[in-house]
Every structure is written in structure tokens, then in C-alpha cells.
Image (cartoon, helix red, strand yellow):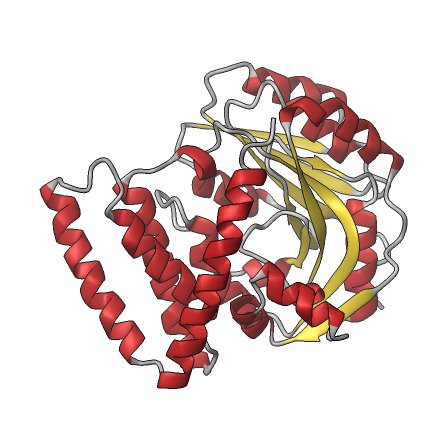
Length: 343
């Protein structure tokens, strides 16, 4: 029998988030499920975020604060994983807001399905909606109408990533949306043992992509809840929206290449990794430091690796990968225009 009241560790990397951090922490402390260990990892923030973390820790014994020199989100996530004592692991970004029932519903689905990870839906919102979203999250979402359990998560991750194709699949009764998930670690609940021996590569921008393949290969089953349980703030100052250096694009290329190779080993068509790999390679040329000798040399190495990996695909696989990439590029154009410009 699974423990009906297990300790759950929620890891929150914190860096210069003083304007949003209280919204995030409040949404965690107000969870309907209360047996929590909240690990706030201050990654050398130089605003009032460290003081805010300490203030909350003094008020709630469930909070642990780790202060460390700035080393990036991967180092902060790893510090949280190393400190976590919970039977299950969850992550949250320091400017996002969890629905009050987030942990309760994710845990219920995980325990009742025998899955290795549970996930739910999320929505994006702009800074102007902070108070409104915070109030809505305190009410708590209704219980999910459907919980879908599926196997072979690596194959789902690689094949189900175009929104338009997911909509078509749902119209055809295939429940395709339930099999969709990206590399983000939030709005999920993991069995702790999934992380044994896995840590995020420090010093990389694409740290979540780099560990995705290894994590999903370990999972036997995933449970999806068709309810929004997480609110993702769209901030123009985030690394995802602003970072454009050659290293940023190359790190995404390297992560895509690693997952591409893993898929070949596992007999999985690397549709998403093809999209990541080809896109990052072309985006390297748009970086302001692309003309530097070191960037030029690395780009040539990436070109050779790209050609080598694509050559390992069958003609049919190449066609399908290229076709889904074009569909996703069109979707990305719409996404960038609508979501990333939220106010």
C-alpha cells in the first residue's frame, strides 16, 4: 500500500524575482495538500529575494532555504535535489503560480495509476494578470474529468509536440493532447527514484532538455490530468525570451543531439529532437558573436554532427521529421507573436 500522506519536496530555484516571488511561495504554502518540504534555493540573487526567502522560512517550518553563489538554474536545481527528503519531487519556477490543488491532484493520480510521473495542463499569463491569477489559484481547480495513463513516454515526447496535430488527433478521438509534454519540470510530480543518478548539467542553458531523454527512458507509465494546475508567467526579461548568444543556441544543439542519439538507440523516431537540432544549428548563425573564431569553429563541428545524425534516419523518417518541423515552425511564429508578448 502506498503511503497515503507522503512527504513531497517542492524545489524552487530563486534568482532576482523580488517582484513575483511572494506570489509563487504563497501559492505553494496554500496547497490543499500540506505535507510538504519547500526548498527555496537562492542562487546568489542580488535583489531582496534572499531576504524574502528567509522571511518565509521563519514563518513556516516546512521551508528550507539554501543560499549559494550564483551558478545558474541547473546548479540551483541540483542543490534542491541533493537536499530533498521527500518520497516525491516537484519543481516550480520562482515567478509562477501553482493552483491550490496542484499537488493534491497530481499525487492522487500518481498513486492510483501506478505511474512514475503525473502531469497536468498549464496556462500562460502576463504580468498585468498577476493578482487576478493569484486569486483564482487560491480557489482551486475542479477535479480532473479524465486521467489518461500512457506508456512509452519517450516516444510520446518525441512525436506529440505540434499543437495543430494534437488538435486533429483529439478530434479523431485519439486523446492526443494527453500524451503531450515538453522538457519543463514544473506541473509534474515525480517518483523520487527517477532522479537517482540524474542531475542537470551545470553551466548549460538547455539543462532541462539535456536530462529529458534519460528521465523519460526510465519511466514506464505517465498519468495526465486534463485540468489546468499551473500558471506560467510570461516575462520579457526571462532567459528563454531574451538570451540570444551563440552559447545559448549551441547548448540547445548539444541537448538536441544527445536526445537524438538516445532515440536512435531506443528505436524511437526523434521528431522533436530533429526540430531542436536543426533549429538550433540555423539559429547559431543569428547570434551576435557568431563571427568570433571560436563560434565559427564550433559551428563547423555542429554541421558535421548534424549531417552525421540525419544520415542515420531512413528516408521515411527524414520526410516525417522535416514535415513536422515545418508545421511546428508555423506554430512557433503564432506562439511568439501571441504568448511571448503578453503584458
